[in-house]
Amino acid sequence: MESRPHHPKLSEKTAIETMRRLEGIVASAMDGIITIDDEQRVILFNPAAERMFGLAANEALGQHISRFMPERHRPTHAAHIHRFTETGVTTRQMGSLGAISGLRADGEEFPIEASISQVEIGGERLATVILRDITERKAAEDALLESRRRMEGIVESAMDALITVDEGQRIVLFNPAAERMFGIASEDAIGSPIERFIPERFRHGHAEHIRLFKETGVTNRRMGALGAISGLRANGEEFPVEASISQVQIGDGKLATVILRDITERKANEDSRQLLAREVDHRAKNALAVVQALVSLTRAETKEAFIVAVRGRVSALSRAHSLLAQNRWQGGDLAAVLTEETRAYQNVNQLMIGGPVVTLTPNSVQPVSLLIHELATNAVKYGALSVTEGRVDVSWRLLPSLELELRWTETGGPAVQQPESRGFGSTLVTEVATRQLAGELDISWPATGMRLIATLPRSVYRPDISAGVVPGDEVAPRSSEPGSAGRILVVEDETLIAMELCSELESRGWEVVGPAATADEAMRLVDGAQLPDIAVLDVNLGGKPVYPFAEWLQTHGVPFLFCTGYEQLDDHHSFRNRTTIRKPVNMALLEGELRRMIQPT
Image 1 (tube, rainbow, N blue to C red):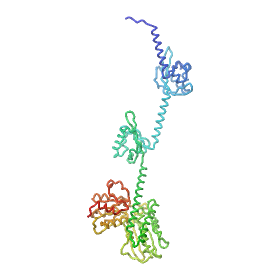
Image 2: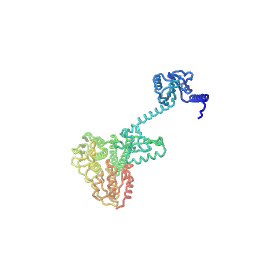
Image 3: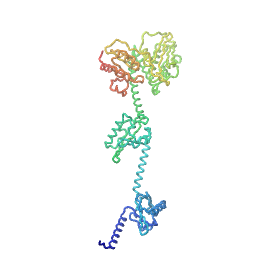
């Protein structure tokens, strides 16, 4: 083979071109390039290094590399470079020296990232460092880290529960407020499906709601947008929550974050306010109905006597309501009730009141007030208080059975005898004591004066004793000549309202069964007996709903309507659309509804 001739000039030219290309690369590089000799003195300092350190190359050449490092780092970096040159490793990649600091000519420190390489030329070992100013990147990283820390702080300290779920609706974030709310540690919650914290009956609906929300593209819905829903604590307790939801796209998937607020206390306050409003409305209308009944039932020989009778009874009701209001409708002291109702007749020598401390229940204050008012009025007109020599002793005691015995004893008055017939006042006393208060009444007429003993059940007073209503004697159905309208059951716990209803219905041709003051009493009247054609039911019977008895009537095919002071009935599924007459009762309206509901018999 023929060998090619060697051209020294061509090799030299190639070397020069290569050198120039390398010089061009070094000069145009964006990163600082510094080459040092065995003594770590600078022998190359490219333009990027000049800009980075604020120093011309001719000033940098010959300087020790430590000049470009903060003093506190110099020993460490000098040792690091020395060890590297002895290892025999030719390069270490960018970042292998970690994030270190550089020192500009003006004394400013700045973060840099470095890589290092070494080569031996003519027996001399040279090291080249490539430097990158990461001031902006470090600032961005620091800002991001600070932002993340702030966000973590917000999430950790938030009063509301924050729960983030992935596309499979599994929990990926569960903050401390969520831990407190649901009673479970974050590590136990993360990875669980969100439905774990939703009552079972709501799970399908909420899963579908979140799925549809993710598909909408809407990024958030405000607090309350999901409405008032229920959460489920780890111990199985349900509680009301208010929620807002947001979503964010992360890569190919979406994360949804729910912010939850426990509204147990707020819901209780709202329910309490609604109940209070309902009770105020009910009591006001009930009071008006009682007054209406008083006016309707009161009889008198003259207009003046009628006015006096009505005014006295209405005043008794007013005093009872004032006493209840003073005690925030928690009841009333029996002695205070008696004192208020007899204040106009009190004389130190004629009226004596005494007995142990007894607090009447709220439902008992008004009927007891009416009872005492009627007794006092009768005593002033016909009994012991009609003469100066007369005397009335009012006393009470708790019997071993825990019943309350109330005594009204008159002496020194005109000679008395048992009336041949009962007037409205006597009827009212009897009905209040035996029906509304569910007690027993013993009235006697010795020559010395009328004596009344009312034995009332434990339910009329509340010295921390609550044994429920003790029924009085069973009230038999009223027997009247069968009318053209039919048989009607009246269930009403307010004596005067019940008396008026019965009177008005009887005058319109109805055969009245009752009245019954409790659901139990009503059941005794109809169970096993001829069923009524229709019933009129008060909703609230001494604080107990009439609904169970209404359901019994419904299953036995007896039509009924409600007669109540409540503006709205409780949300009872069976009776939402049931006919309801509001108190005070418009008898013409009641009559029309009754006749509409049944065919006359």
